[in-house]
Length: 570
Image 1 (cartoon, rainbow, N blue to C red):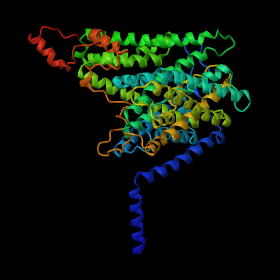
Image 2: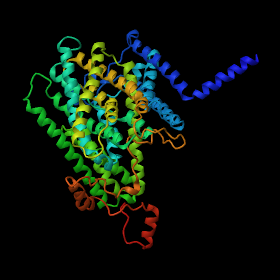
Image 3: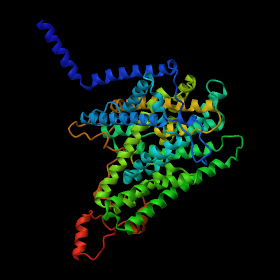
Image 4: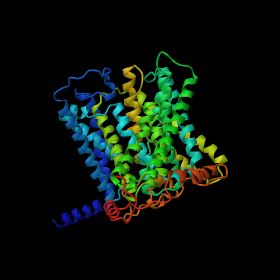
């Protein structure tokens, strides 16, 4: 009996000594079983939920009253409740993982599996229709979920580190995205042309290639921050992935115009690309500069509520202007966020700076978590058209097209790069870090064309690619970094490890540094940017220094006593 007790104690000590490794292995095994069951449920259960994009939209909005299902509001309330409860579970899960400094898996993978588990449970209990009623359609997805994610990426970006790698970032983001879209689109077209997989028309294939070229930075950058990788790798991956989203949607818009019987001339995609790219950039810069000038010229900082309300409204204004002018809202809000963070934030009070920064982070976090939960729910809830051959070939083409992007461009950059070269290890990590996520899935929901079967195949294949890249590539990033012994990829100090939520995909904004110019003096060739910023733009659009917010009640009292002549603008 004593031997049995001693053996039990030894086994318990071994399990405890293994720590998180045992938990992760058991958890992955369980989640793998759940995933397999979820895929099988698609064929075993009769209840299917069509994706929102597959439902025809109402074209007549003139009717004063539209009769709806009496139970629709009840179903919508239940569906939103399921989403909110799942989000709360994910928030608590992130908190638990942060407290224990667990970085074996990115948060987004946990969120996807949470969506799969919830979706499977809803299907088994017959509640899937309630969740389906709360699924956003393509318009809602682009209008309410994507903009906060893109805005926060540009707003909290460290501009100085970004501009230090500006040339390679722009090459990878613009030229590389075009290469990826053309290689994937051409490959998937040839596959269908020879009857191996689903057949796509030429411009449908290029449109598919454009949406699948949108790289998601969330999972990989979270691991990079946790592992403290070298700055070159960090900002090359981040900068390329953020700008890549904007370029991918511009390509998507350009090629989608070519789908249909009335094909315009070959020059239209080029002109459309230039119009969208240049126009969106101008709208983003102009809107944010105007907002910065208004903040400088007024005393909104004396009232934090009005200040933050105005700042929140103008933050997302470029997106809707660009969408209304048939430009790229994502491109506009990204450029606008970078400009607003550079010129607008110094005009805020200290409270406004901290509050707006945290508000944007919180909204973006909820949006990102919602997207990954949505992916898991979509896997078990949508009525998919699975073409296994097309899915497998598409995954292979994703890896090939990414390689034809990274390695040739890195070779060209290294030939003319006077600074530190992009090493082979860095190039491999950049290739391995090509995860797909929110933008690719959102674009697939909005896939043009009248062929319903093609649309379903695109949505299902995109979902499969996203899950593969997030789970396999994203989950393996940490192991690859350790295996290759990437410079700067040090072990995490458990006592000082930052929260996975508060750690940015780049660096935290520091209120004390808002008066410093973010545009570095890189070379004599582009030093005019710094001179223009310091001599004209900064004095015109920002205050001389950031003053702490004065207490509004105290200011009002002092004004009543006559100690200050300035009236409080209320």
